[in-house]
Image 1 (cartoon, rainbow, N blue to C red):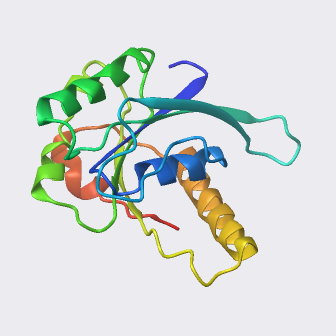
Image 2 (cartoon, rainbow, N blue to C red):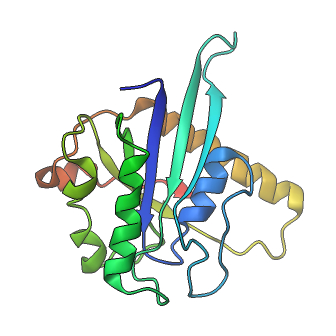
Length: 183
């Protein structure tokens, strides 16, 4: 495994993958959609570093890979899967985390994608997690309140990511159903 931790975000269109990516990198560089057609038409990748101790000596470098939404109404399924497999180029040295992003509608179709052998073949320690993204309305709240909520969500998510352990195996699904609410 390299010095960078690779995280891939997978989920249906409009479930909050790009929102989650923006929370992780603490920026708005990933394009987010407000409608039913995905803004993510190709893989988006950003890297960031996070200091994990008060002295500033321990820094973790992350690479966040946002994929095309599964079930994208503008693409056929084969095109979507092809675009998702393009991520394998960026994770040759290893994949630390697969985040299946859902907004509460975890369908049988999405469950079918949990067996991502085309991405994880030959890669050790690839534990998938299911992340619930609660995209509550921003209306009626101050910008400062929204920033505070986002920063708290980011802290919880980064703590979770630094403690992830396990091995990706489709037969371990029950143990991998972890829910994190990211607002």
